[in-house]
Amino acid sequence: MHALTVLPSRADSAAVIETPEPEPADGELLVDAIAVGICGTDKEIIAGAYGSAPPGRDRLILGHESLGRVRAAPPGSGFTPGDLVVGVVRRPDPVPCGACAHGEFDMCRNGRYTERGITGLDGYASQVWCVEAEYAVRLDPRLESVGTLLEPASVVAKAWEQIERVGQRSWFSPKRVLVIGAGSIGLLAALLGVQRGLAVQVLDHVTDGPKPEAVAALGASYYSGGIGEITARARPDIIIEATGVSHLVFEAMASTAHYGIVCLTGVSPVGRHLTVDLGAVGRDMVLENDVVIGSVNANLRHYAAAADALTAADLAWLERLITRRVPLERFHEALRPRPDDIKVVLTFP
Ligand code: BGC
Image (cartoon, rainbow, N blue to C red; front, side, top):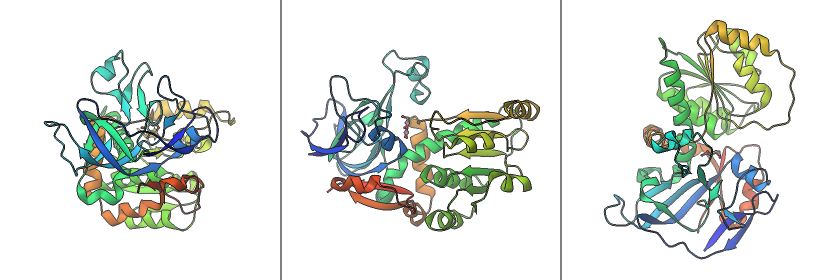
């Protein structure tokens, strides 16, 4: 079978290679790949800046935004051939830490977790893959064209859960959310905000094309100016930062209403220096009871919430988010950004 692989820590080593089909271990599903989404993490791994291969191996099979169809399932697994499935990314650390022992592996405390296609475990960018039945999520067959969005949606469902849990520490009745970045994470965060009945504003730098169109189709408001222009009128109760751009992260922290919650989901590059008045931000955070949360990954509860959110969404709207479908063998094309890209997926023959 063909698989998209890299030599982690070696820039530009990505290659589609021929490798034997995996054999399912006890309790595992055998799955034929349909598609795999590409995200910033994949690009970082390909640039040699992140990721690790399975122990004893040089190459890592990439791919963590999976979608496939079950070819074979063990009896009693709850799955049957033909089911549409997505594989969960993270596995608990082997110790396990308290969080992993309680199924909250997205909150692993010792950092010894593994992640398929990212850290120490092969991913899903191969024509055939296996997954433990307990780490497979069944999708509504209606979602086949957009099923690769489940993993990013799970990351967003976790972020929303965190925001709501932090909000619940006192009286909480948010009205306005600002989402920074209209990539797939930002747009899915906006979708979940609209589903919660909030007034959603989305900020990005592009002025036309599929991003503003997707925001408008959601019934949210789109802005391409600075954060200050939006927040001057009405400060948001919640800000979801989905770019990782350092100055936006900092501006978000300074832009909420009282009792504001900023949730950071974008991984910022390191080594960029900004001159900022941390005293002013710290002072506002104290005097307004503000909170900044970092949020990464997702556990099984979040995948279930994400599947519900996608099922409840308008399919035609979700399809707008997948702006290019590129066959696996032409992965180089998928990695070259185009101005109108939201989500690019690799397809399997
Ligand atoms: C993935 C997460 C993962 C994170 C860090 C993201 O791209 O969506 O599942 O935890 O990268 O490795």
